[in-house]
Length: 449
Image (tube, rainbow, N blue to C red; front, side, top):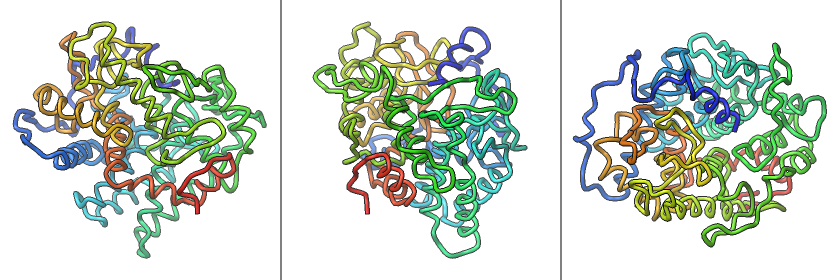
């Protein structure tokens, strides 16, 4: 949520226009969207979308670090060097998909990831926790906002979610893969989760900075995208947190429990109408929600119903936006015609963000395919690009983004793969640390050994 707050504060003046694509190195090659393949089967279309979107994390990766750039257009005046911690977590999961599906060889993928983890091992970290942004060439922190120049616990959780999947997948006994696993285990073991309780409070805090201390003052209380942070913090071996931090911190807020129905769908947790759809994606690219339950919710019901509420709102279309309907739905955080926003039924500017419906394939495959067909077949000339779909569009305004964001592109690849094969879910849930953390917090799952 802080990412959203920051972007909204900047939207009035300093955000670069997503209509004004800036020249970059490497510059995107000319791409003819009209030449995209036609009349594809559902499976062929899913494969194409995943493979094309993967190019963001492969062709456009930072050449020194291999990490994911924050976005495909200039990042708030910082230039080309900004790489994103959380987006890289989604990106390394995309590399696993690419290796598994044969788009790149396993050895090529492993060597890329070895370079990336070697870079991370040397990069700035704060009590073992990475900042939101790094300089992809030097590994030095780039501040995300005026006082956000230290550790970002949530973004680092998204990164670790991906790195733990990498460790589980690259399990061969050779020099490259062994080195990957060792470095990831070192990075994991050095994360001081307990430091981020701010001296022993019964809640985790999002940020700490050596320059500004706890000045950001953002306790992680649910329900939002940060469930994964508590699972990993509980499962850590060297610096874990107690279960009471989850139950008395995360689960204690005025927007945690819900229980009401919207469009006939019950939402166990969260804001009315569910909030932006990334709540159902970011923690669940690795966490398998199928049969995942604790004393508060069934997380499959939570995520599926959140998706169905979001779609039902778009079908009802109470504001009368052009294009909204069964074929075009999905409200989540993304670029928009004014800058950036956390789009949801409660914050509706007429902007559809493709990652919302496409990353929901596990929950609503029929409806997500309906949206995918519209995005690709009908709007493809305007929103299909060299890196897959652009970030967002608004048909009422006649606005179609030129930008791509790592945190939006990554879940498309990963969640479609989880729908098709369950690959990332199986890898992440096989981690002993994850199972320990979930059990410690009182979860149940059919994946428990």
